[in-house]
Length: 367
Ligand SMILES: NC(=O)c1ccc[n+]([C@@H]2O[C@H](COP(=O)([O-])OP(=O)(O)OC[C@H]3O[C@@H](n4cnc5c(N)ncnc54)[C@H](O)[C@@H]3O)[C@@H](O)[C@H]2O)c1
Image (cartoon, rainbow, N blue to C red; front, side, top):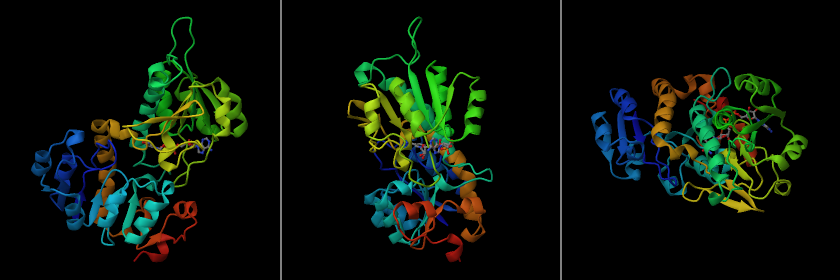
């Protein structure tokens, strides 16, 4: 099998899919093609990949031409679509439910698309999304604190307050991996954190994890509307596996908030949980709607590539080894949940539903 590692082309995306350390193990069994400069942004030189046994090529086209299995970080962008063919298996983050264009392009290519974010483990967790959610969650806490500063467009509240002046009040919507890590950073900075989730059990766990330093709230429209007027920042961190994020804050609800409240929508990669969310980039991360500051960068971990690349490569590597050692049909059932398109069919129900496209169960078509 020939494995291709292209250089990421999304705005300010400095991650690379595999470290030279993991390439060195794979290259004893497989041919590895790495695009020149793919690892530079994460601190890995071309020489390091060469020494690990990879063949370096100049262009992204050569990577797709020579390789059958493409291992990436972010979803292919329109300029990559023409390179993708039925012979390819593409292992990367896709977040299909946020883009009909991407979904149709990959379906039409006939490629096998395995999405990191829908691979599950036996506990029902998302082992390939988790490391990036940890990073994005921690960054979300940092970004909320930063954008509360006046010169950044915020209301000028110091997140942790000082003696005699109370800290910022921050709503975290969703107490999963992103929400927990954002809360960890914000509690560490002494913010007053309100975590909202639909799961009472999860809220109980968080209260215990944070030693009662947070306020747990059941997530429903009534409670969100009740708490919003007091908040200085809101972090969107909900997820319904594979599906479009539920819209928890409508445009109309922005009027309940104080001017310059900061919204950080981490769930933007699944379409966002605020109605007014639109994806932004690290270059231009924020915009304002009705006096409310929005931050919605869809590749937050790309800002800290040194940490993110190592964490991602560590998580995907065992799955890659499994993928290379057996047929798709013999993969573990929880790993198979990652297969979103196969031979021109959409094999993930939530993705098909998101765009009213036909859904084909994988078991009906897998050879
Ligand atoms: N922007 C980025 O760079 C970036 C990076 C990593 C992850 N993400 C995204 O962040 C989001 C969260 O990921 P995660 O790993 O924390 O997911 P998770 O599954 O660990 O947690 C999601 C939480 O949301 C809760 N939830 C679901 N529906 C809800 C609702 N209606 N109201 C309140 N809570 C609800 C669930 O109970 C769960 O606790 C995902 O969309 C993920 O793709 C974005």
